Image 1 (cartoon, rainbow, N blue to C red):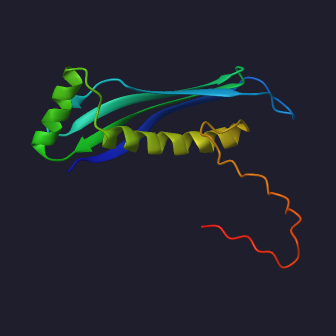
Image 2 (spheres, helix red, strand yellow):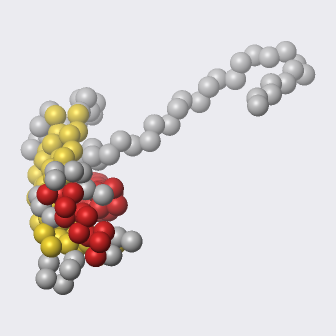
Length: 142
């Protein structure tokens, strides 16, 4: 079983211009780059990463740098290193662990800067107006 601890070492964020209502259409691009997979003397792995979030139009930018520290069965860790050397994608548990930490942090940063969060917010559908039905009629759904 692989266990992952994520530590953020550097945070950089800047709002370039202030926008008022109505908010223009904004596209948000996110990129997580896992720089390397380094095997440590104690048998654990260190996976440095960089998250960059860019807004279009260029209203802001967020950048987070850090490392994921991976522990687990020696054979599994050796496979992670070999897959990295063979340019295969990292295990989903590593990517998901990094994503969870950095996106939560980036949402907090976006709130501080008063910019849209870099994740899609849930869309709440508009309430439907009740249709006129004859009195005593019922509608059933299955």
